[in-house]
Image (cartoon, rainbow, N blue to C red; front, side, top):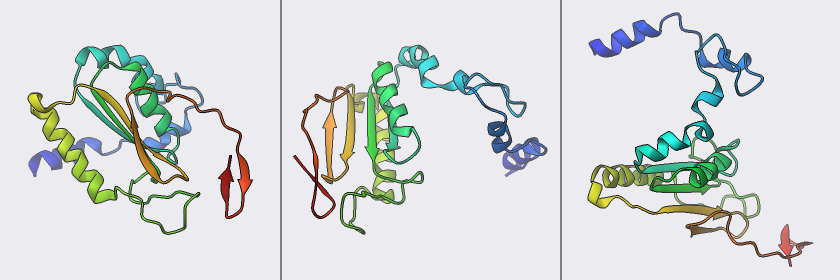
Length: 173
């Protein structure tokens, strides 16, 4: 408790993070609120150091959460580490899944509790060096199809197909 109290005292008078974001126009801008630019901690600038570290990484992101899916894919491409990327149809909290091409209210696994269990399994396997998954893999949810798929390479092979609007808010080829 003493450590918590000391940490809270240390934060007194520190402006909120949102104040820094108001001062940023470009990635290399350095707001007065913190000493670094967004470029200083982007994966593009740190990929070599992360790869040299070599530790396993699990990256959860969403097709609907800003550019988190893009960031996870960039990380997958740029680092050499064992990497498990999960891209789903969630909001930022991971608590609400949504597929605009599926029936409203349809349950899309994994739910938040299952996601948290996955974090713990990954962490335990990572701490047990013998249990580390050495491969890189992306698990991704396909909107509309409502299925989870996995790949060990990105981008996935293209299947060029012409699509047309069909009845029932569906696409047809």
